Length: 411
Ligand SMILES: [Zn+2]
Image 1 (tube, protein in one colour):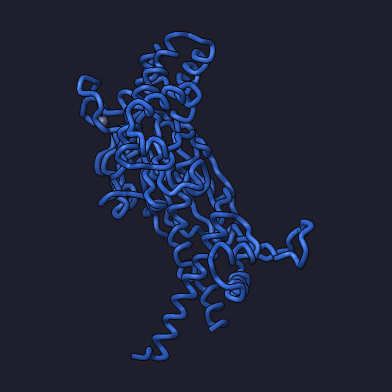
Image 2 (cartoon, rainbow, N blue to C red):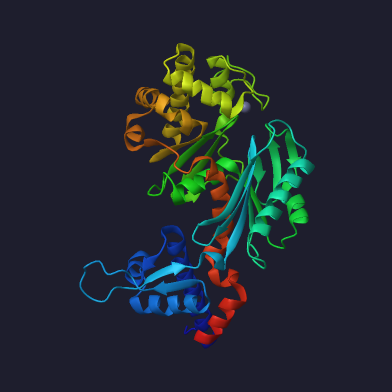
């Protein structure tokens, strides 16, 4: 049956929106590209790229500027660049020791950010919401008047139900079933969606998009501070589980004869490889925090046996847990974040040796273990990436009135 005219029109509009998404996503992830590079990246024709980039220029979402001639023959292809302030998101993070905020522009540039220390230990919802709301207000006061974020993303050290914004369990904050999403939406009053997700899941997203796993599609990101969390990327997509709770690898039972965990169980992986395990074995107070970790690393660099033995213990248990995870998940890249990236130089050899000894040869042979490259801000940057996702998937729906005008113009 022949499609009606209206149906064809709708279909071509759907295609156009998908093509705009491909272009905006390519520029967001890879930075400025020439039209020829956009042709190569998106698979669209040269004339389609010219027309769609024209629409984006008319909507002030991209600029085209003369490329620098690099001695190649022919006319240089102009460089297409996202206008980073054309759409911004507000990213927030609640870590165990700190809270952070960033205003991030389309394309991933951090336009303004701040991190403040906060006391470790249990905090009420009111206290955390007040801290985040203060950070958000400061961020917005430092940015041009009238700039409205298209969304707010929040990284939390806990189990988060993404659909409801409920923090189901955050042992290091002392939270059970806390409606963080609803409360933040109420207090921030930005009139845009507030998305909440687990910090390790978001760290994984950031490392895959902009960090140590940029070229990998199957990634295990392992993040440690007080607790240990994991983020899984499978064939390029985050694995979240049925509610968003997937990746709680810190609570993988590994030692039936081990210590009691924050979660109430015994012998979880984080009781052997988390910050507390390292500090206790090195002779420092378990609650010593990042200053005590720095002291352990200084001791180890000076060759002090207690610190070296503590790091050896963590390295061996880290390798043991990773061997099991590599056997199950077959990742091509394991990225070690947070505490693990700081201790990496001291434990890399032990971790590799344990993987050789314990993992199956076939997946072992394919995996590389690397330290994270985005540092402490990975979850915050991941919160920004999560918040940009709906815009990247359908720029026309999100770039609002400006794109509608363009749509009419080119219809
Ligand atoms: Zn546990």
